[in-house]
Image (cartoon, rainbow, N blue to C red; front, side):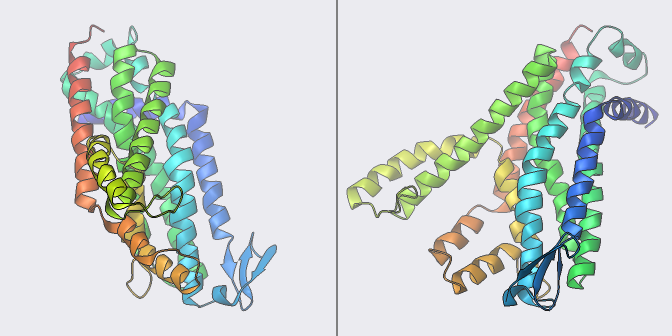
Length: 327
């Protein structure tokens, strides 16, 4: 335990010495405060503590619409855009030097002089990077938790699902970053290649979704046109191949989207399904069944399980390489 705390402390000190650590933390807190500044009154929604007013009967204080929109802003904008994309990129850049700098001459010798095996040392360093995201996301979730109580009037502990979910998303990508950092010993190369890998994961997801719509619904998502039977049959064959990369690669986008299922409203309904129903009632949703199918057709166990399986393989390769490296 002492060795773990020592190595973890070294990683934390390295991160704290980086300006990006404080920049990322500061921007996250600013985003949380902006979320806190959104309120509701008898006319509708207010922004920046009342500086701007959006009049809408659907968003009046105490309404289900206000609760739904406030939680949707958290899951779609705060989580879906900031934490799942921008903050994750900053975290990857911030944590990228952990392994390359550790493998530099002199740094590894100090740690290896302590009674700890190389595989354990590798996972201690990996845990230090996870702590970076855990601290940032936890602070964010606490502010959001208080904001929901203040603005909506309910305690909603399901927002804390954002903490383990975002740690999972980051771990998928950081496993690849750690492996590349050990292999190349280059911070820049490992970051760029990891971002390229992330784009590959996103491309695999989009390809699978487009192929699924054509093969199983007989409709082109891009054009909205119905396909002929022979065209749909061809797409069914194509989809079998399109689904393979998606099944094998980690799924950061779908993992963060699980919050749509796990964050619930005060009446116990999942946020994602409630949002779809509300949009359908207003006539702004094209196909209710397709939307709900997109939300739930892959189980959380499959999404997380296949992603963790890929991560485990990459971590095993990285750990093996780390253990055999000459420091």
